[in-house]
Length: 411
Image (cartoon, rainbow, N blue to C red):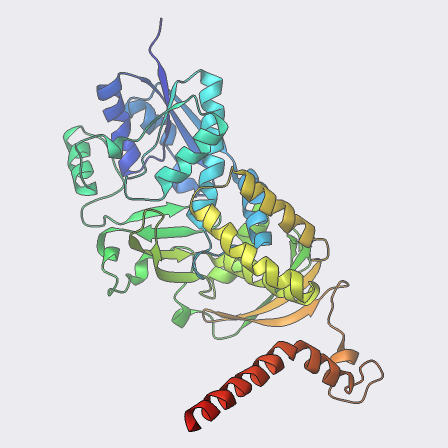
């Protein structure tokens, strides 16, 4: 009878490179390394299989799940309007459930008894990965080395890797953590833990410095059907191609950078720097199209849903009944969200350059300041009287009580 197998979420970075060796020594498992291609770039995937085998993995899977990430996770998120704490477009968070789903699929395929990941005990990703596993196969054991081993820091990991001849892409001189996928890239830790320090200019990878962006603006038109983007500048594109095209366009104008101190799920604040060029354009354009096509009450209520939706993605609650129910509501609101939004990009900024939709609720004849036959301004008086009736009643009662008190005081 062979050894039990563990599926490891393997990136080839510092943590998971060390974990392969640690799992073999601590648990004596056969290690199945699984790398999910979510658009982190060819350079980061190159040589991963060979590296994992040399580190001690017995089997390696590199799975391209980019299209699934976009169509089943990113697009529903864009439709929902989810933005965490007003800034974060959830680039890391939205990739975790689809990666977790793939880990479970591979574990079931190879007959593994456990799943391991390299998320730290302080971070959000441990919750996101483990919630996905619990929801999809609660019988799988979960191993989180950062909550078990004696290594206390990334510096310890670097020393461990050096002692065991494990090749790693991180050095003590440049220790911040990087997470990249098709939607964004994030930077955390190391020198960035000082929130009063500006990031180094050469750190950014998807966007140019806005001050060095072209001196001429560029316009880009994004077309949607039922809230799903399908074309850029009139050219129909497949989901992955569309995101990549928008990343290029927004990136060369320095659009999509965010530097924020956010509230982690565990309660502590952390500083993160994000580049989400194409996602910034998509999120902004979709919201503008909704403002153009949705009625007021639906749009306003959907804004409250967006806050909850963002929290659920951030907290790792994708595979939950409530998130699925909210998705059903969101889908029903997208029937009329069809049309195109044009944006003008210039040195890190974007503004609306045009709107077009057959489903618009904007009626220039109704809102004009010129004479029209559709709206009788005298009707507004009755509306104001009825809508303001609670204020009128309160005002009357307040004045009566005040008068009574004054009379009592005189007597």
